[in-house]
View (cartoon, rainbow, N blue to C red):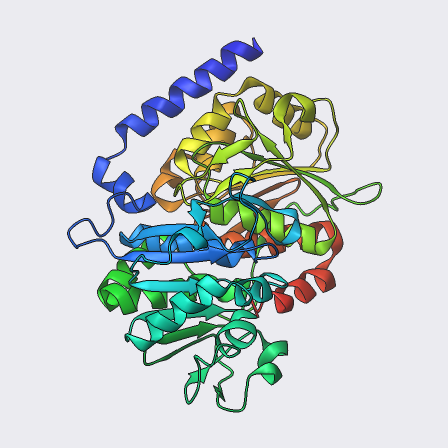
Amino acid sequence: MMAAAAAAGSSLARRRAASWPRFLLSRAFGGGGGSELAPKRVLVPVAAGTEPIEAAATADVLNRAGARVTVATADHAVDDGHLVEAAYGVKLVADGRVADLEGETFDLIALPGGMPGSVNLRDCKVLEKMVKKQAEQGGLYAAICAAPAMTLAHWGLLKGLKATCYPSFMEKFTAEVIPVNSRVVVDRNAVTSQGPATAIEYALALVAQLYGKEKSEEVAGPLYVRAQPGADYVLEEFNSVEWKCSGIPQVLVPVANGSEEMEALNLIDVLRRAGANVTVVSVEDKLQIVTRRHNFNLIADIMLEEAAKRDFDLIVMPGGLPGAQKFSSTKVLIDLLKKQAESNKPYGAICASPAYVLEPHGLLKGKKATSFPPMAHLLTDQSACASRVVVDSNLITSKAPGSATEFALAIVQKLFGREKAVSIAKELVFM
């Protein structure tokens, strides 16, 4: 019976996807964005300790705009398959190495932050040479979080310019920099920003610099970014219950080929910051996952079969239509979710996953939920779909990449309390 239900859910998901207008699929998920323009070339260098949310948001948003994004490791190792040990235990596989790109020309070089990631980028001599050449030729360059102070300013590339960075690093700016306490600052050909929760705003500013304001607004639409950046996060809660854990919360985050990287990385990064034990599990046949934008190949911690032997306090899924469809057709994962629901233990999903995973398998029955707006009509109960984050007893759902940080913070609040969530929000420069 369980196998039949899983097959039926998968079939329903395929029929729904097939019936969705092709142009809407393209616009909603960024497919073909910017194809009418010559593709801009963008370099996003990463290194050990890079902040994954910042790197992913930069690459993802620029990819949606139509840019050709190269994620390259600045680390020295050559026999590691371009594996990068980013911050908070996130393992990424880059496209290549900065050392092999010295002769290449880019329309933008955008540095993510994180510590010691920013210092590791700073110490890459090839990258320093490339960014200095970019600046000398009037090309666009950018940095976020610690990188404006620890990397660009150290290289002398912010002299006489207004710039911002992670608030606690403002004092590390050299005397030649004009510090500005703002979420994103553009001065001539340099763009700077403050932290993980300003990363989408920063990336959209980069799109505006490369393609114009109209393109930036077009890309922003399907992300469903916050109307008021810097404001408090809001969750709508029904049938409030306490989420109980016997100790450190054990959280399972499934990922699949086609999962939305911004959503997955927000969950992993934010929950690990809060102190949860997050296990990233692959529902594919190997640990390496090709995410929705193909710029970040994630390395999962374990395979699904091993996860199925364990108990988790929370199971929460990222979206991305191809990833959600894979989740929905994976019987072991559906069985885990059903067991979680039957035990009144928390579970949740964002973006495409509420509509394509939870709904067809009866996991939203009798509950309020939200989903990616173009898919909200697939929910039986659409009464809460206008909300960005919805909690109904042991279920939590959210809308889109632009609500991913709020989604993760709401989970922190349910697991650790409001005070902890606010502390993490401030650390992210969310509010």
